[in-house]
Image (cartoon, rainbow, N blue to C red; front, side, top):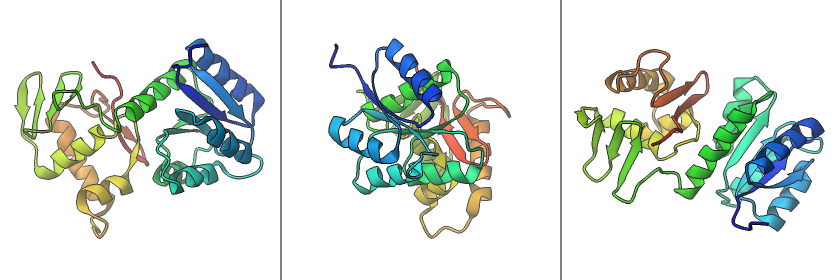
Length: 236
């Protein structure tokens, strides 16, 4: 066995989903550990220290949110991807605000599962930033030069307001992670801001327009409707 492979803990009580995820991940050279309850998942995590956790919310002993709280209360930064059949946006937002990195709605396909896993591991590997050795973030033809505080697309500088720049940099530093509206507002405007989601949406619309994104275009920024925003995971 190659001990350098990423180790993934799947906490899921539905046998068919657990087996499906395990088979797909092992076929793509990941080590896979499994647990059927929140309590067993905590024990497995403490014993094996996985690189990533796939977590169902509807567990038989405790809600999966309790697992997220357990890890984040102990300052554990391992990526957590929530597997959920729940379609209520409030549940997704609560999981993300508690510290989950992303969520995958059941049923899900092989391609989506692997893409989300790769993105989350990339976040972990680069400590939340796709920062290259030259101090730049690159996504397609978009480049953020952190040192010079300059944004370019295909070599052409894009003029952003300070707020638009701050939003883009925040998303870039959390590539592959969904940031809820509340998280972005808190980080950009501060905890006492009362401008709400509307102000964020206006700034985001202006930012995406300056980046050349048309409505429905997700080349750089993806809108998770009713939840928040993420920066596109595909990098070159």
